[in-house]
Image (cartoon, rainbow, N blue to C red; front, side, top):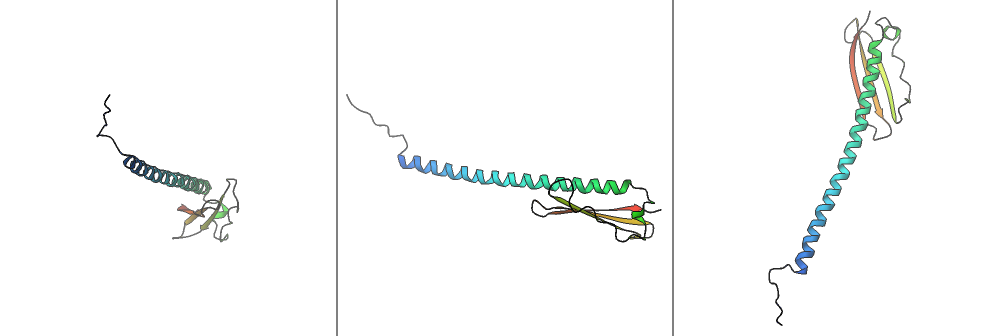
Length: 130
């Protein structure tokens, strides 16, 4: 009985090199996945901060133009509570009466993410005084 050898196969070194290249590719893919997860978490926190700032702005805009906060005698406006019910965020607002012109108040709201990097989001709007 005669044994035939296959000449068209891969050597052990070629297989090991191929597996090594494949493993390096998988490690790079895993690193990209970690970056994507971190980016998703960051964007979620920024979105929450923007939503919180928008809610505060809408609350202030819903107030009557004759509200004491828009009175020139109150300067500056009282600070929003240091810690909000939403964990990890702090928010402040300022109302500049008769800024930039008489009869207009400039409202600036800043929300800071204290728990995740200290990023801040600010929104500025205008409201007509009485």
